[in-house]
Image (cartoon, rainbow, N blue to C red; front, side):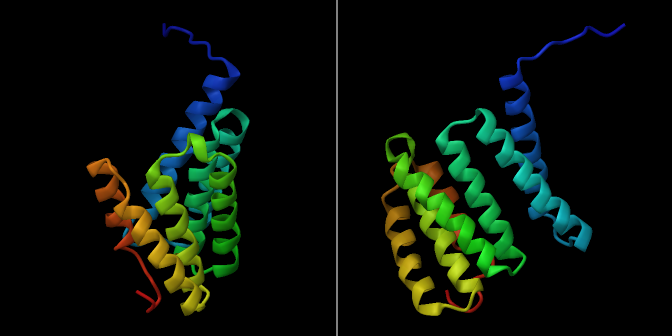
Length: 160
């Protein structure tokens, strides 16, 4: 007989936020996704963010908006990518004291990528420069490497 476990609502929200985030990344990193995979990937990212909003910190919500923006950029939807990149940036500005240096770099990267997928090259280049500078300001080597691996990867639609 298995032991029955009990969880608080906050613990359940945390578990589901992390699990949906993991499933989102699994699909995002999948080499060949089906149309159904793309739909699930976006659903999982929104589900993760919903659980972060219920119990997480501003930093988790900001990163959730970044992830949704990135997925829309990957899927070629510049309008939604920019919408969520701007929400990511607003959360960053409103909670700057809670954020890490890499969160600033990733917020600029999200805006740049959203403009790139939208075909707005001048704006994309402006935010690429901001992301580059913010990335260089990241003190922790692992976080800086992680940022630049992401920044230098993925589709930039001929802008970068």
